Length: 238
Image (cartoon, rainbow, N blue to C red; front, side, top):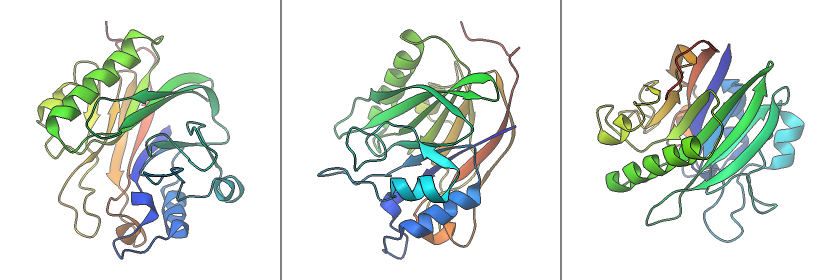
């Protein structure tokens, strides 16, 4: 069983307008995922400084960040970061540019988990539907045209409100899209913006939204999670 999650931490600013990285870290520890994607982990301008301290993560948790950052003050790439348990091996990682009017990107990492190799890609897509579709098309191309195939999980804030949207359908040729539940805005969620998307080798055993007291105030998004099992005999896409 593998627990994977996604959390838009809004640069550690809660719904009370206070920047509290300690509160964000508490939610991360409550989630207790094996692999956790973060969105808005870094500030957008200047040195793109992370709002979570790398040394604190290493010293106080069982996680380490995948080294996507291009500077020593950042945790990710365009705010996208992935934390993995120390028992999980990092085999390879890459930054992915996505087309848009504003800076956007995705990240992908190849991991070894209990002797199995998998790929995890994390993203934070555009607010504009036209660009979401272009970004997903670009992501599919980059993951499937230039890389050896691995069982893959895609996670992140898709900024898509409808499960029936055209952007979601772009995933469904190769993947199963799981909407764990309403995650935005955190005090009274009405939108299911955060999703977990799996290739055929994975079976989603459980999925949900983390609704602790701290999570409801630590960010405008609630974290989502899913428990997965890997079934290597699953049907591979052509």
